Image (cartoon, rainbow, N blue to C red; front, top):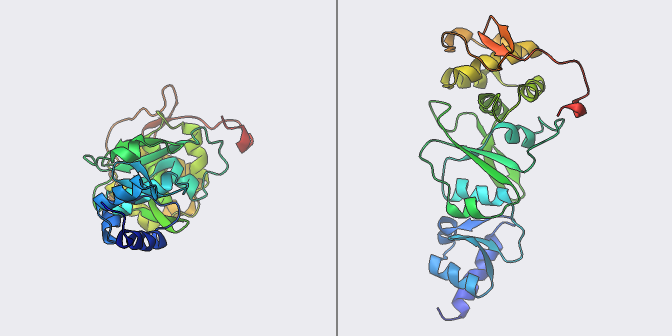
Length: 266
């Protein structure tokens, strides 16, 4: 492709509408009149930086994982979201924890969803942990929210959904003690949304553990839930090996530890 004023004109318009910190992929570029061939020309000419195949950043722009995830969610339209503990942290609910996985971002998507290679292979300075599962039935967007990062948003789990996602990982990648502390901070959850999520959640373990910890924390919203509509399954569930058995929810749990400062949590 020859260097010409038309391509430079398109570049000027492109850069004027390109949010700082955002990765741009072909669907977004095409909306701004830039073909894949022209985008590659801009890269070879040193006017844009290529993150990976089909993904670009403005030259000298520092992009992080949020800029890449935004492209996957809003430009490619993939049903991927940030969930679990990182979602709670981003919304201010986990600031008191010593984040042992500061560099970990857990992504959730329905089974069969494939993340683009450029997102998986690029060094974002964080580790993506990808969970392809259908934890909830019904509408994919139930319990999701948005958070702005500069001039663009990303999609993540609202606290009501994030805590259920987190509890599904107890006691594997998520400790019981940390889950207990996080539940203690969730005094303002919305009972209507919780009702919907509990009814659609496919994990008996997560639901039983959620209700046990919520009642233990004494949250007022628990009384507004209609548990007759929540399927809690039958039989016992071992959540913590060698733990104390809770007869109401038929699960084994860790007994409360001795009081200590939040900063001492391992």
